[in-house]
Length: 414
Image (tube, rainbow, N blue to C red; front, side, top):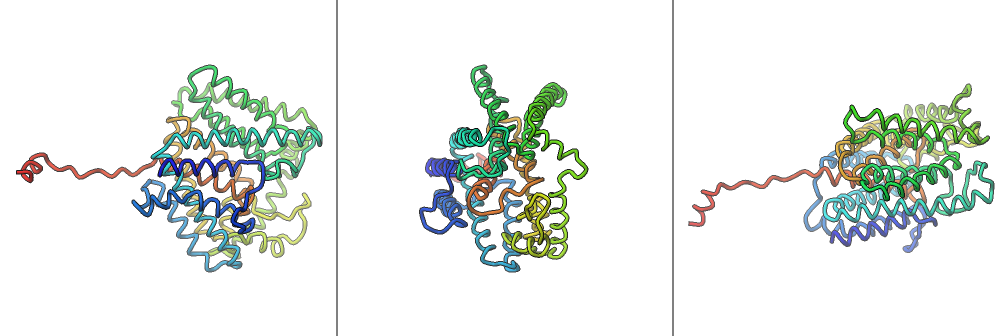
């Protein structure tokens, strides 16, 4: 059963990272197609759960507290059908979490294969995206990519490159031979170059944080300054490379202008007002855009968009599910990061899990990547829960067997 579950997760990962959109073999429609695939992929974990119950980890109380609060506010949603779709998506992602947890404990080789599948898949996406970008002009900032079809926007592609870099940094940190380190370094350089020309500012920031954290994670404090300095110099070199293009200079100047990130700041203020109007139960998960645009942001912003989401993961949670659920979600995130950091001196998988979580956390401060249950957004959400399951798999609660004195055993035998 562990082998079957590991194989199912690899298949799910291939579907997650592949260039096309989410397949819908059961004909349930785009909002539910990915959710159903996740449910099917976790059947072995469900069978194991029915046989022996759920595995126990230190992360479980935080996960189940969040799920419980999430379900409690569901009846108060302003759009129950939409919220019901999101509840089903959460259940599917929690099952993926437990499937990854079991696989990490019982068949860890599959987790390494999953992470390497992500690296290879992102490389394929990069090749397809670069081919399309070259047709349009390499120095042009393209908002929507016709290819790869399943990852149409530069924010998604940029974040996937960051996930790839997180895994590659972890491998480079633990590789002992020169040849593997050289190969990984070359792939990282290619990824950084492609990231520069995607012109995604949040991806640039995320990559910079990854190089900084990756350089020092798992090292003793006295030995941190040299790799930290090296990471700082690397980030500075990337910044210089970005500044060599007109598009890059204009995007960087937007940070230092009179109103940096004015669009996001305005959306955050309007979201805060929405939270103040619906503090306890929010407007219902999945209903942010339907309420926010007509009521709190009826006109186009300076970027000619209206802000379909809060551009911040935790503000989105508070707006849709209320401040209590949002607070519990913050606590869950803190627990995940703490437990991942405690394992950061372990294998490359441990380091990769921490760095991927860091990538999700940094990017989520200025963006909300999970605004749909299907498509690219649904797949990214599942990827986050899968990595959380890997982290939870290394926080097992050990059950100590009851020790029976030898003299008692001999007496019973007599």
